[in-house]
Structures are given as C-alpha cells and as structure tokens.
Image (cartoon, rainbow, N blue to C red; front, side, top):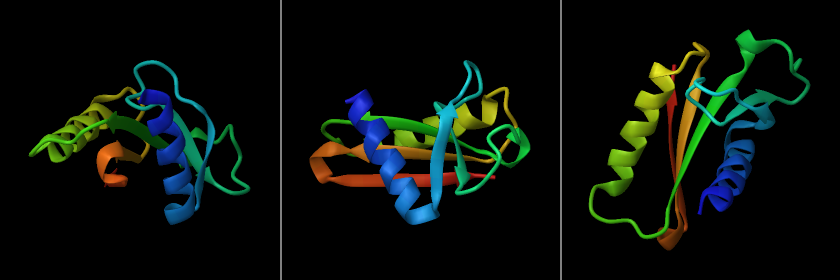
Length: 102
C-alpha cells in the first residue's frame, strides 16, 4: 500500500501541479519527498515543496478526511518550513485527495 501510494501520489501531483520528485526528504522533515517544478535547482531548499503521502486500502466513513488532517499536521510540525502537500491515495475508490499546507 505504501509504495503504491507513493507512485500514484507522485504521478498525480506531477500531472495536476507540474511538480516532480527531486529526492526523498530527510527524517523529521514532516514529508517523504521534496518536489519542484521542472528546471528547479535541487539544492535550493527554500523553493522546494514537501510531499507527505498515505495510502488507504478500503476507506471507511471519515477515514480519508481524518487521515488528510493528520498528514497536514505532520507537515506543519516537521522540521522543514517549506510549503507542503498532503496526498491520500484511496485504492478502493481509485481516488487521490490532496491539500496544500502554505
């Protein structure tokens, strides 16, 4: 579920936001990947966007919104202070739900 959610979330964010994965984020950053638009400098951390991802096999009532809230909180509490995106991949609904943390 985890690896599949990463793949689907990264593809979804690339298609919808024009951001692509540069590298894995460091521990305690609040995220799993750093993203940037095409052509961005990978060492320019101030202009990168963090991505936190979670996957749900079978969604139950309120589970998606609850998980999204948790992931936004994780981004907010991370050591990095760059903007972030939380993405929840819901496999049984073939859906990606995301929200921005500014």
